Length: 280
Image (tube, rainbow, N blue to C red):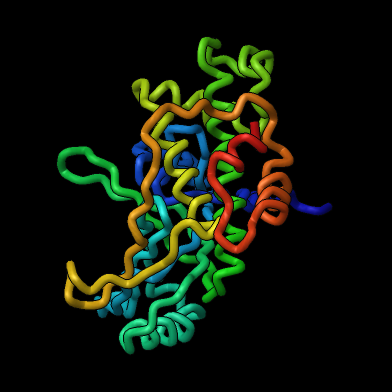
């Protein structure tokens, strides 16, 4: 008789740095094989995340358990802290290669799949990070693809969160409100933990990601603040006026964004408002 598998691989969440950094709700599994999650304000249940950005910091550390690596990658909305543990020797050769490139002054784009981790400070503040499972250096084209995918995922969660407002935190009530089935559990946990917050910040985060994806902002390296060539993103000017969130199913959002970029880009990028109009 075939034994039932105890471990089920969790879905990977495409996640902008801003959403993950704002999360402060960990959920620890009760059993040996139960997964751990970080629940974001928009209701993402993050066990594994796919993130991407320019390398901002990286270093090797020697400890009693062996060699580990830690660092930071930056996307247009903020930063992700990551680490590679001593018990992951299969990743150390590639980590050393990446560290060497960074220490030589190269700055490059890195894509990570990482497990959600968190640290609770003495004042009970929660700080999130990722333990790398896989990583690779990518080109700008793949980075733009990821920005679009992560923006689409964020808009989908934002739409679901907005649909849930006014409904009781019960699965059947949220189904009746048209909240997607895979987001119901996370939204129940989120709304039961976080106080009310301004969703406009998440719209602006998506706007920043799409501005870079459409060529309105470029990756640059600014030595003036640190004197060490640490990479930053150029300042993105955003309109602080209210922008309504998506009100329809965003299932075709990626295709719509790509088609809008292809049809309207004359070599100078595409206006963000054109993308919003197409999505609405």
